[in-house]
Image (cartoon, rainbow, N blue to C red; front, side, top):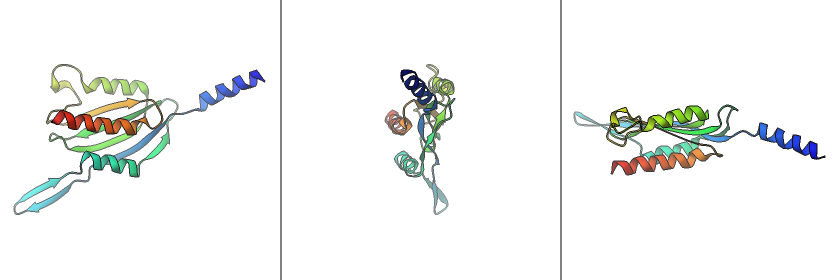
Length: 146
């Protein structure tokens, strides 16, 4: 009986896959003509995150993708252009996170709090943890702009 329980526990641990939230939301900016000028209005980061929650879904990760990721792309004015969540291999996550802040010179960093184009990465490894991580990343970026 104990041997059966051991095999059952092992089989469960092998079959257990990480579940991550998945969405890829592009900011739906609108252009408004005012006289000869055109004004572009972006959705707020909170609106984009809300759309991700509404339209996204929990997915079971593949066996080699045991990290949940968040990637956000911003333009040179700090506007959130794309929010991407899903599953990723832990080694890929580690390499991308290492590129966020590579050193003292902000020109070589991928994740920039300054008014420059930016691509920030974050990862976690518990069920749907990237939903919270996305909110935290958006808040941190907004704070760094103040």
